[in-house]
Image 1 (tube, one colour):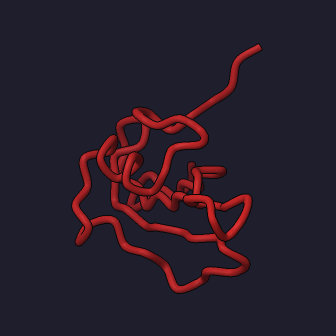
Image 2 (cartoon, one colour; image 1 turned 135 degrees about the vertical axis):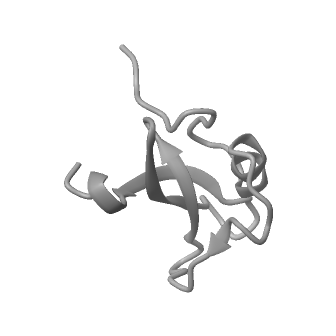
Length: 84
């Protein structure tokens, strides 16, 4: 059995690990203001499967003492690829 991951990332990575893996700086990996119950989300403009996209990386934490870990990724394509 396999699972899908965003290219270069793996489930359970920390925020810093994901940012480094996709080659973004702190300035181009923008934290969204929707944190609830320890969840964090970050937006990055990336190439997803060869097309420009806005990618949101969602992180959760098991407890207040744990680092947030990658638990979901949302991709919205831009421009002429917006229908994907």
